[in-house]
Length: 535
Image (cartoon, rainbow, N blue to C red; front, top):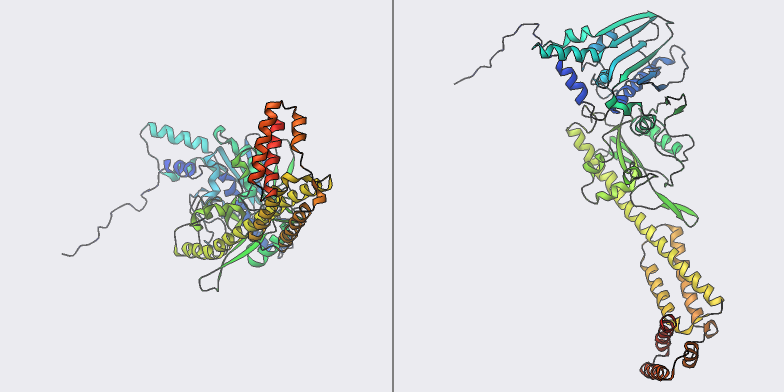
């Protein structure tokens, strides 16, 4: 029996979205309130990129900037990007509406422009575009709207979203210089529960880690990383973002890498499609380092910085995905999606995976990627290119570090014995023990795997030094004569009965070790030391 679809009968103007959903969408979308700042920086970044395409045409040489300032309980974000026109302003009232093209700009879902209503009483956006002599002022009175919705709900009234939004928003304009182009976002009277949005230290750390900012010019590895990424990524465009603190102090925000960190030279990995033709991503990485001789070499172990807790010290451990310069997820996401074994090795490194394939798209809250075949292709290619490379490198780093540490430790032993030999010699009773330690040390050095040429030289030099010290110990002139039985008896003032017991014991030992005088001297020396300390 054939079936036919049921055609729903409805009025053309039937409202399917009700006002309460606006609050649900806005508040649930940002569990971490600092994400609101990222949304507006994302819009600013896109606006600056759009302006750069026409700046030369209109002979505008102004420096692209984003400025964030904290003023009382309000947060202000300013950019001198392309701005918004008369046609753009009314569209600010639309939820989840965007004319940005997916895969061409960082923001495209049309939600971020109203992010401020989730955390503050009022949102105001002031903007003008080049050639327009009007400065447009859009205001969204969020607190009034929430109160309005709540009161209506108590009365059993369910209002459609559109009229409620219209009632609590307004648009005005004033005249300005038509050459101006900028946007100001004011998030006014931020809620007490969202006070992290007013903390300059938290804002600086968050923006530096998730936004497309550059490296501090003083960071010694910054230039080479910028050059490599600029050559590989057509959309690599770090933005100058400044933050003004409540006390008026202003500073530029940079990525969280500086010369106070002892880190290794950065490395780079290109991630290509399975066919090896298309470039899917570019990864740069670094690791903690330490002085090994005259060089600074990777030291391995979990990447850490200064901090008053384990969480703070390890906050930059692991790689992070970047799309249009913005972080997707946190530093645990690559570990979860790429490493199937030896996951601890992922945290030995810090760095970024810049995604070239823009068909890979983030979920709305940018905590992960949308599940698509492009995402799976990216993950598979990253496992082969990045994970295999870094796991192998981690093993090499570990081998080199252990080899250096062994050489350093045994070098100190050789130096100690050298000082003893040159300062009157060593006790003959201790000679066998020291020679055993030296032989054992040479064996350890011979077994150490190592690829660094300088550490290899150090291993060889240390082995030779240990062998020389052993030869010096065998030189009778370098050995102190062990104290005789009579010396010990006199020194410890043994009574007659104890002296006889001691004499019998030492005679028995000497007879037992008659074929190995070195072993006798070793045991006798230990007995003498024990008597001196306990008798």
